[in-house]
Amino acid sequence: MASPAGDKPNIRQVAQLAGVSHMTVSRVLNDHPNIREATRRRVEEAIEQLGYRPSMTARALATQRSRRIGVLVESAATFGPTSTLYAVESAARASGYVVSSVLLRAGEEITPQEAVDHLVAQGVDALCVVAPRSSSIAALRRIAVGVPVLVVKPDKDPTFLTVTVDQQAGTALAVDHLVSLGHRDILHLAGPLDWLDARTRERSFHARAKSWGLRERPIVVGDWTADFAYDFARGIRELPEYTAIFAANDDMAVGLVHGLHDRGFSVPDDVSVVGFDDIPLARHVIPPLTTVRQNFHALGVSVVDVLRAAIEEQEIPPVTKIPPEIVARASSAAPRKATS
Image (tube, rainbow, N blue to C red; front, side, top):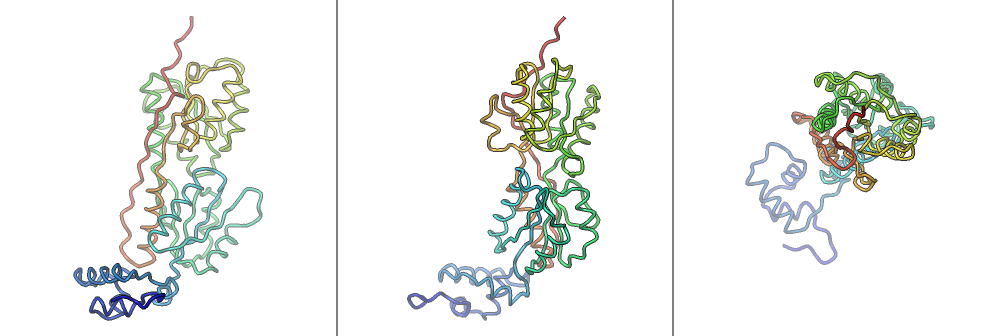
């Protein structure tokens, strides 16, 4: 049964073709669990045959949900938070949801309360918080949001749903890679320690280094930027005792490579460098950067799966930390030989 030329097929035409009521079609569209599989297949075949596309407005009225996820992003200028936002948007779109986002940038006066109020005013069904700091989590706990809240953070939380790429495993991969090359003295250039990912990477670095019996040395706390790392490397007066540096993100790793080069040191002959994230430029710098790749696509899918379950009052899927992988390139090699 075809629709008249120029007319969009409607839910009643789908119901007529499938031999069911329009309410049954609505239940199939909204993933109602109490639908027989044979009925579900007939409805899906009718939808496909007619080319029916459900109205988001109609679905919202039927379910009293907006099918909208709010995303609050801190430090959106950096690769990880931006990539996470894009991944959540893509996964939400594939699931029939849309995303409204608010970006908290350094120097702007918008508070977490104002950001949440803005998203809630748009009628979001759930809230996702990306790249949180300890201070923002504390502020979020004081806000009555009224919808499910998921925080992309390294550890489970008694208040919020959580999803993450496994930061501990990623750090272990970086340290293990350098150890496998023969390094026994590694410096860690950390991100700002109010950021939960930076703190987790810093703690995981110390734990992994200790498990290998590596030399203990103070970390250097950076600010995520290549400029900070460049200035740090330029300030090294002589060839350091450490033979490798693990930077908490690729931006800082790239700054290190540049600064070491300008200071007259060779990467990796004098100092190996490993980053974290696998930004698109990592494979194009000279030398190409060894790094830990985060699977942002899988992260976005997991965020949306968990939030959909919470919104639709279904069982929350068991959340496993998404595994990262080491990408070995030319910026890491065996340590320089000791000179007499």
